[in-house]
Image 1 (tube, each protein chain N blue to C red):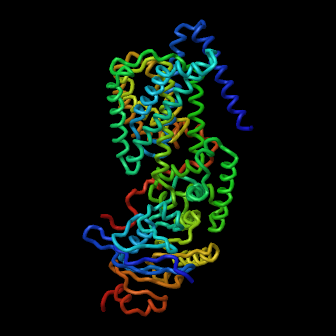
Image 2 (cartoon, rainbow over the protein chains, first blue to last red):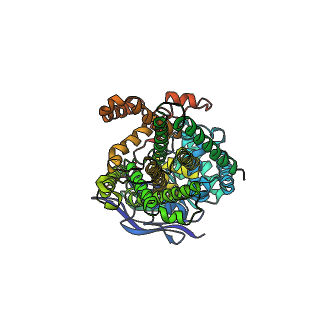
Image 3 (spheres, one colour):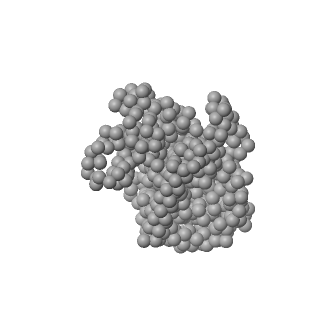
Length: 254
Length: 348
């Protein structure tokens, strides 16, 4: 196994608040890696740093040896990092299918000129994207909803659609920001099974941030714990479960 | 080869239209025929302006209020080409009036479109990097700068106006411009790039995260939009035969914005309808010409309050009729208007 994502002493401040401080960890290729921590631990900030929405003040982030910190978000995506958002950011007025097709733009778009003259290459590419998008939707059990407006979907389906959209960018590393937020235990279980299946089907590496301890413990093979922006522990779920510092961070010093 | 058929059909149709208009309105029995002909051409020019602005304001969601600036650049550059370069261009063409005139007009229009596109790139590059209202302010300023600049260039007449422009544009050429702008804007909208523009309009951050180069795509749309404003400018110059900076004030820019707001932001048919309506209505109500801007402002406020989607926008009453064949009503707006800055973490 080789390291796919490498964070080295990443720090990000917002005014006087240090949201993420000297965080370092490595995610192996093909891993299912979880980042957990109490509210305000800096989990989402960490995601925004990795996906390029924020630039770290110090430290560096590399994907397969290529530095990605400092790149614009769309360049980070081009390197092969895709993400979902904690507060779902679908385009509600467009159909489920179109939401996927938008994410295909980066890798599969024909040139603008060919779109204007409707060349054969354009028609071919549109047909390819259509088939690809439908396949992806089927894989995430959204096939029957393809022509529904994304905003009309139930919450759980919207979350799955966000994952499908991220996959449409054909990433190497998938970042899931609280994928189980707002789901009931049954849905969470199904989601976890789905995430494992996707990792195996697409040979992905998955990094997920989660608040729900049960979900993380059940799904992830390795866990990194943040508290107040600092790393406090890393290990397998069993190790984390027994770690005194982690218990203290979650439950308070007893 | 298949694609040649509609193009040839359009050309034939426009030639026929030109012939009919000449026979009926210009040489024909209808009183005030030339006046109607003029309104027809102005409506066409306004359609090009509205359809092109719709690509920026409607589809990409970037609010530009300086379209008259690009219209002016196109008009003055094209007019300069035909006035100063006309004889040279005529020299290399066979001496058949139709070929000569068409050649000069095509050269002038290309130059006007190119100049407007370059101006669009220069304005768009810095301002489209920013989010929010900056583009509106920059484009408003740009429009005024262009106008003041023209006022001070003596070679194009300055404050006296630019005279002596040959009358080369007619209904055929304006119709061709309308057809080209409609085809290009429609094809862009209904493509991968069009979908990406819609994504930018509703959520720039999500669009970026999906790997869309937001700035580049916005600039591209803006440049295409400016180029067609340049085409409209050239057609206007070669039809009116006289240009004056006062034609290109911010009032003209607002007029185009109102056209697309009235028709329905983002709707191609809406832009056409809005442009035609706002060309014909003022002619019908010539008596109220003094109150035009008051009425425009009032109309804009009322549209924004009671029908923000415009006449042909999603859910509009005309839109509902036009879209009968679509089974599903388009979803309500709320879902797509997430705060652009809220990406879940703390902010500075």
